[in-house]
Length: 328
Image (cartoon, rainbow, N blue to C red):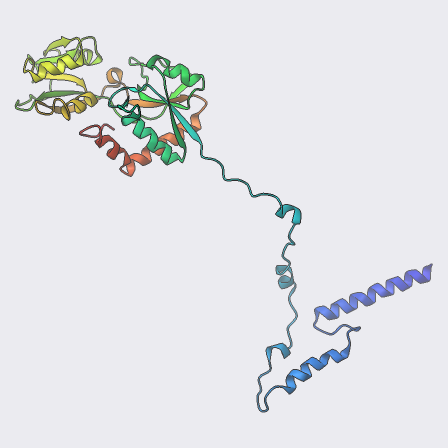
């Protein structure tokens, strides 16, 4: 038994020595020396006087350990090769809730298709977010409840961002808003052939200013222009008509509504004058897109997408289709 042990140990030592010879470029002991005839044959075929040696006959330097390791490529795994490649994730579908009855922001055309500034902006946001876009109509009073019930991902319906003193809809801990996607300041309009007064309290003293009765615009004008003569009307349409007919000197109302009017029906009679009056406690911080509070990440992505649309001019192109000036 001890003899066999010594015999095996000797064989292992002999084999290890042979492998060392192979690594150093020497022929193995059991390789037939006649194999060296290959070099002799190649050398015989070399033209006389030529000192070049064919590459096949040149002695090859032994590979370094690093080179040997670099050549060790992983063997293919048949089981893994049979596995299907992971499918490309499907684009997210974003469903916007809207009213569909508030032109020019969201409304139905004669063929029933949804149109308007809100709708076009929502589609542009979907494109930017690489999402499929969908719309679901709900009455105004049911937009936020439908959002909270999970019937849509967001509300885009010219909904004002709630601020203290101007909460419509009411602030809700379960609902968050994006940054404003359009502003809603107050503004004056005057007749085209009139020279408008300066937008100061003293310059407007005694001027007849049409306003919608009970509106935030009437409340703001009472505070900001106390010496003006405010003429309240039942609707903003009636106030604009009074200006067109010359019954008042100015009308004070929502800037966006006046832009729409002076680029359409009131184009020939009237124009916007003076600055924007942006007072959040009266006119809010603008219109925002409402989302569920747990969708904070989606809100952040929408804010980034909106900024990108403004930066690349997409927003301005959409706005120009509905308004004579930017409403951002």
